[in-house]
Image (cartoon, rainbow over all chains, first blue to last red; front, side, top):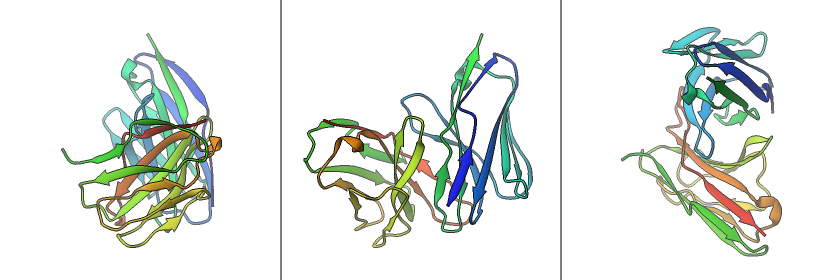
Length: 109
Length: 113
């Protein structure tokens, strides 16, 4: 099974940078995903890491260290629309996802 | 527009009643999933199907059943609803290959009284 931990809440100022950490313990790692979920909406895909290192996609970057069971999602140049929950999910060898409880990010003007 | 649809959007149900949540995707994805999302617990997998004709149990399958008669549809049935099944239910699909991503439907908000 999977055990996934991420902070419950984070607050940052518009234009700033926020880093959301995710640690996991898994019996069979096969990739890590980050999803964004606005209140009352469905999760939407942000990023995918399967190898160690940094994946950059515009203002969002995601990092993975498999040996440490650690990932982070970096949000740069924060905008008000980035206020949402960010979900860390680990995929196992059967292609099933296990999700953390999510980190609610509040962006303040 | 390609994607996943779920019905109903929301439902209030008396305990003991039977309820089927519908999920349809038009992306020809092989794999489909049902999750429930509860405050503080995140998304938890109920049942999944890797391909039409097959299903499997997830983390919290008790009280739920699924079927996968064809590629597009993956209904979730609560045979006899209980208040603890009050939740938001999300259906998702993926193409089932190596680097695939799961795409989520809009969700069904279910309240069992």
